Length: 619
Image (cartoon, rainbow, N blue to C red; front, side, top):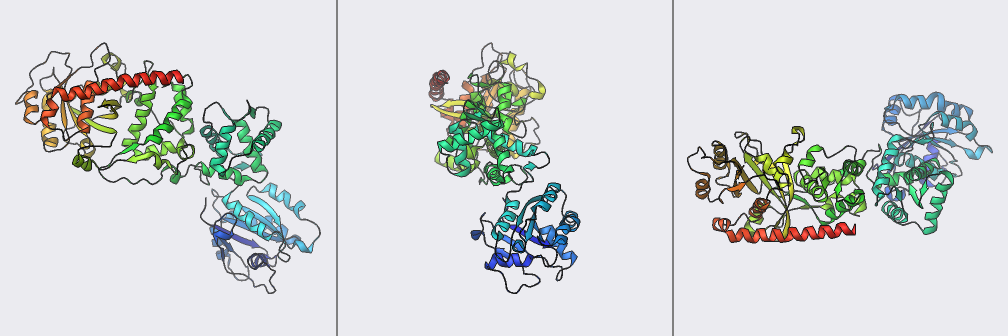
């Protein structure tokens, strides 16, 4: 909504422009009327819409054409004043003033016009019979008001309608020629309907309508008022009400009715509550609320945001199989202006046997977006209506900014739930296989992944000492000479080499020695493709000896070439090291340490599966 309103009054000499302004301000007809009054500002607290209003007078006797053109270009709304007892002043509306205003305003930003018939106290008849054809001819004319500066008739109403024409314009909403709402308005209201349809059954039931009413107007509808609204729709539309709930057609019909009856402020209140600006685009302030993130901190979804996203998943998982089919996913993102997830997402998170994103995979992708690009996450939550449905001030209320990593190191404990592991390795060392194995895909399943659908990220959950954590794996492109700060910024480093390639380990050793020797970031060496015959690495020392020298755990054998899902124990180890980077070398090599972590993971994985089955049964 605009922060202020600028109203310009134009018209022929002696039609009463200045008298109208003076009568409004002093609440009495002036005994002496000057040619023109200076610009008047009415404070926000005395205007109906609580917006400061500037009223500008024009006088042909005191101002040049150039000054008039400047005022026209600055005005938010223009009142063309005529005298109801002066036929010439009425004719000048169409043959002079409207063409003049059109010539001096931007074609893409139409300025609303108000026709003002002054001096109604001097005649007994109305001028509306003459004015109506003019209003039908020019769509930019919002309304016509007949008034009298002398007896103060309709003076306040005149300036209220002028203010309303700016703050609640008809132009973006409605096409008078077609007598229907414009496509952009229909599109915006359709999104609002779908966001408000909390159970996704295609109708707004009484509970949803009342929630919508409270969200937009701060008060629910009385049961009888609710029934009256539905009865109006029933009388005018065959399929406007279904199973005693309001359909999308009925919802759109109601707003068309509001606009046609001059109550377009009702529609604007709804649109603005759901984030739309005057051009019916989602406001940037709505999509990207301020969020302060200090260096060395990361961003995560908090409990309320996860609950909201769970409700969105449940809303669209129509077959209750705890996975989103392509159709269900498209339906979920129908309130977005574009499809945010591409085919690579199916190779970034866990999917079922059909390749559909599971409930866990869905939450993992949201976690990934929040961690890597929190502004994008805020935008996405805005499209879904998070602030309205979760009853929060903005999407930023769903984000937790973690404390600085250096504080975690000092306190030797962390409150974070998402840990990043950057995976380094030479070409064909097995990095991609390592990422996909984390998602439960063995080598056979990995072979069907198309190159253009490949992902350089993989994210899923692990359990460490009974705590569920997200581990984010990122495959770093093997360009040794151009490692960026982002390549280095992580909680743990994973160095992957191919046991069957004698030259594979050398790359890992060089990366470690150049970038991570003096780093506080823990590192782990992965001996990939361990199902193949191991060969001696052509380096100054063996991988095992290298790890001993640099106080790293011994190389971890890994293969994804198995009939079953690959073993996840190694990912638990990575998460544990990321959570406890201060753990000394003796602890890392201790079998009892890893046993405690992996037993905790196994117990909670089994427990999680049982809870999953129970939830599935309930749903």
